[in-house]
Length: 109
Image 1: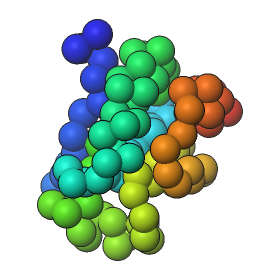
Image 2: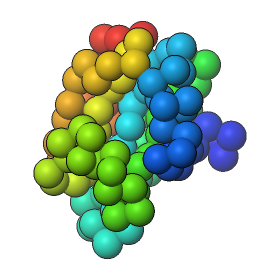
Image 3: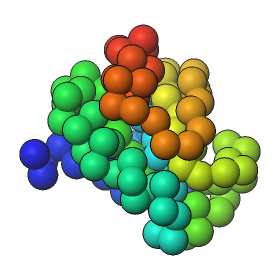
Image 4: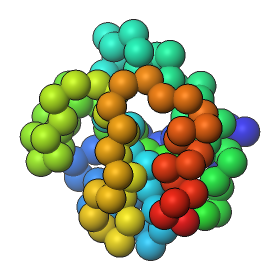
């Protein structure tokens, strides 16, 4: 499973890893101190494994990359955004169930 874990992305590689990905990407905007972010982390691991090869999961630490949080109007965390063809196509805020995340990605695969 470790091969499929969500990858951290930074301001430097966000465009390459998300905007130019060539497949849908679920981006988790999170922070180390955020309790709900820690709650959803294992669910994101499962989603990443489930969609391996069809979509990817990336994580952006909003404290370390405030520019990305600002770019996408992140006001609360966790915020999960599905990107397709370089554009955000769906946004979910707060802890989400596995089935909700699976469905959100499946709509765009």
